[in-house]
Image (cartoon, rainbow, N blue to C red; front, side, top):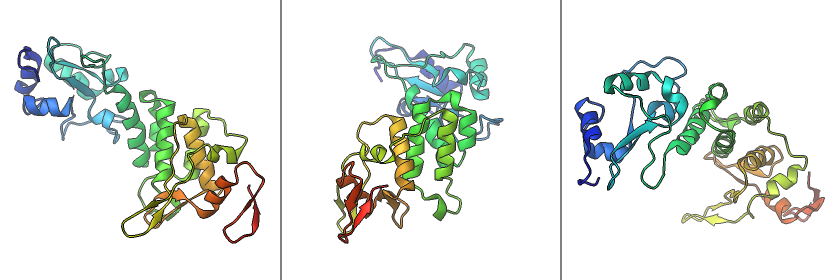
Length: 263
């Protein structure tokens, strides 16, 4: 914090018990819903956007401290209404960008999507999708597919392929006609060796659009390009690597030396 800038707002937030002190306020850069504050549906969903609805920009040179909503629709959040009543003014719906123009709003939209996917709340995510964007939801689909195998889990809350497909359907995403091309658009498989000597083949997607990445994971899992290890992490399978190396050929050679059809 620049001590040459008057911080009346920061002092007010501390005095009203909304932040422990100015130092933590600058570190957290947000106002969070306190434990025990009752939130009705849908505001009680496990979304960081809903738990930390207000961003705080620290004072910097000639710019005073600012607070703003991480999404305009958070104006209806019960805690935001409580804050506005307590502070006596309307919190800026456009966020609180710093002097460089950075705001955490886009990050919060990603939080909302990935938090609800990983909590097993994908239906609730679709019901509250106005707080995020289709690209964020599709990125969350890829994350959910990458880090959990639905058939092996008990109650981890990650996506199954059927659930991922349903989300894509609701979003209006059109399935690619060429299933193999969707996976081959990913980066070339490259081995990663741990100190223990174990080999892994991590999946890198490059700079593809979110929709292409989501479909690539869905189709790659369905068609055997990828598989889960014992820890539940997704990586390239041996057949998947062989098919990738074959390019768009209709036939590829397996490690055993046998020919196989790439479908």
